[in-house]
Image 1 (tube, rainbow, N blue to C red):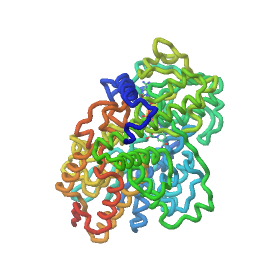
Image 2: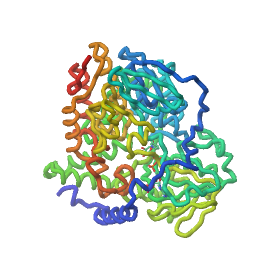
Image 3: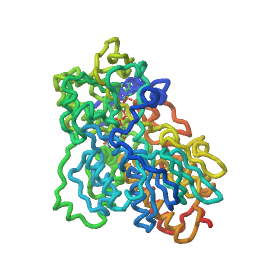
Image 4: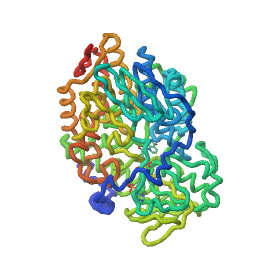
Length: 604
Ligand code: NDP
């Protein structure tokens, strides 16, 4: 007997049908195009609410390395460069401070779902101990500032400075960067860490521009209107307000409990419920932390990545919702094989489905134990596999719906129909509102030039957009042929470890610093990946799976191209190393340590 036919309280076939029916309700012909950029009368939604840019003269100068983007990607790259002896580094960012996504996202309740011990980069290097297992956004932002201070990156940073263009000057062997402040910076090397979570997108709901009340996007929280602060102080400005929030993703799950506490009334317009598992946060014991051995963070990172991707280790150091689901799948595979099953793709798929069904059934059952109104509880249950959307972990979100002022407006997968001058329409009912908050996410699947707001032009006047017209092309997600001395700090076509984004960035930063330091020590003026090496890597990535993006059964979302078929181009734009994150981290460590930097050409 295998675990397949053992007594099982879950009707897996019925679940499959329900999942598909719920998905079908939500599939839209317009896919990603349902979202719009905040332009025209909505362009103020992009304004920086945190800093008034100081006047300054344009900068005209030459630097060794310009780092575009001062989020964790840019910061760890700057840090690794300084460690490698390259100190002539300029960070450039449109935001008024370092921190990237954590600069912008200061909505009440913002925190990171990934454990701080592995999420915060360079903890050993900076000597910082996170206060809790999962920490709030202000503490994360403060860590970004700590890295910038620790490595002297503030001194040369150009903040509140948006890049307009980056152009390769072949004769000079330099990149020319032009900015919104009239700067002209010539850089021998450029590293770009422009991340996807800073450029808000809006739902393209008819009439969105007509609303006469107050609106803002969660990543530009308007505390001047709401009162309160990012540390969670009560939002007194909302006490007499009828507030509506559109979106129930990871951001909304975190800010809704705060809105429920402060708003006169709160209407949550839900298209698809998030899966919300327990958080179980706890403080980090200083004595325990002080006893950790040198090199602990690398060990924790490897342990997490191994377990989260189905591998084996003696212990689970992080022990969170990410490793939980992976361990369940892995243990089920082991049980199947012990019971005589062969290790086939079918066995793996079955183990994944059964474990996921078990997990999601627990998550749905939890809703019933928390939410008192049975109709609301039913509407809050997610009917899809856990990893179809960003899994959420929260101990106050579901509870918020027990507040007498908080109303879930279930739209049966259709979302808000229309917005007018005084509120929103759903299912023929009008909801009068004073304020609409858009928790509608960020540009993730769009082209780099659109997301970052500038174009990069390499050798022979070829732009990065042209180079990637048929999908991203790179070696390791970092080096592009025809774009010498240019490096990307990201995760696509690299480890692609979505559960802990910063570990991808730290590895990329370490690699880039090693390459630039090698160029410096050998006197090479130019570093470029060969066409062959780039091509081989693209074929390798293109031959692997497209991850969740490739799962057609999933409910639509940005993890799966809003449920639309995946083209080769989208596969390349979202795929990672086929061997998985742990294998990639090992590969890249060897690659940058052996001194050969295979695939790169260093020339004078
Ligand atoms: P998402 O893109 O995840 O969510 C957007 C939401 O808007 C969805 O609930 C979507 O519904 C909803 N929506 C869109 N159009 C409509 C409509 N017409 N009517 C009603 N609802 C609509 O954005 P988030 O800001 O929540 O999260 C973005 C990412 O930021 C996360 O995936 C995560 O990677 C990151 N994040 C990470 C956190 C962390 O702890 N590390 C915390 C917060 C965010 P539908 O689901 O049906 O598409």
